[in-house]
Length: 426
Picture 1: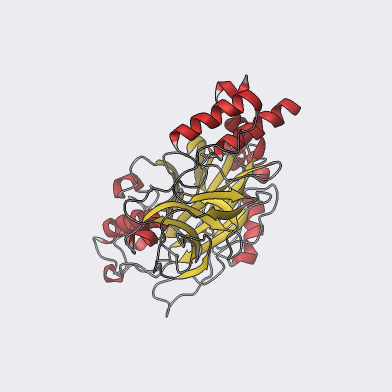
Picture 2: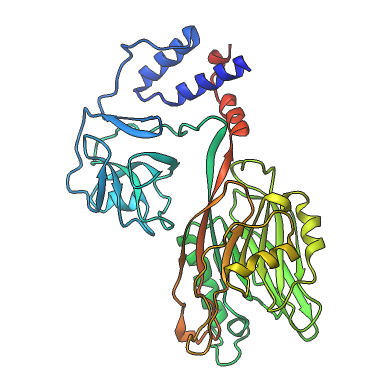
């Protein structure tokens, strides 16, 4: 255990090196020799950004960034690292470039302050939050960014920021029925992919976006190239229903299934997959992911399929999204009927999402829910109705919603140690 702690400490120390290539080499030599570094190691001429106890601090020796807009708080003495407001739907790359600067690093803040919750890439959007910590740099200036690994607390790993997108476009659009235009499905399918990309979604769920009454349409055909799709066809008599999941390229689908949720006229479709996320989640070797179009009554079928696909992951490692046909307080009952295991936390969003035209319909139906311990909702957008010129009858409002899932510290530490140079290990 002691040697493991030393290796982890050495690895974390190495990840915090902020200097020129020569200084980095000196640092590695010093670590190999004694486990510490000399105080007179060469320093960068630029602003040195450190993460100390989760807080951004600077030793300013370089340029300043005047006139950055929407600054909620200054987080460095040179003015280049700020807590930026009005960041919904914008990335730090967008923010910095709007003032003629380049983004160097980005973070989610803890509570409208300069404390780091977790690191982001410059291109990751703040669609689920109104503010982000951004480090910018003027043209021609190349300060070193913060370490690629944020300092994890004891026993924890970097959280997984899971962004989802789900939308019931309703069958009238897919089938060009009840006044919907003949081009409705083609245009709505493309808009589905566009909104998913704008949301930086990693998992999407489509409901009633289909080629037939029971066969989900290909989301790759509409623009989600390289994604893995899991279909949930539900054929019932002369009709049926369709639901599908799709996962971004860095997610691995291990097993999948789907089908009908009832045996009668009120049946609806679901899709389910057991997946490996790109970063480990605490307590979850795999995640169980469900796309649901719930019936208006109870669920009487599908439980065995979910159990077969997900196994023990359904007990406490499930994320489910889609059209539940009930407000948030009714999700728990449907969850127990289909998924089982631990009950989900309060679903989000829990606001009106149905249906076009609102003069004829009302429903608080579209939610994201999870039973992962330690997970929390980190924001959502309920989009306006889309492409009304196609007369998309009964279309729901599309939803972008995200979760923060707790990272697995043990797996993260093993991965970090594997990257430590041999000189340190020896």
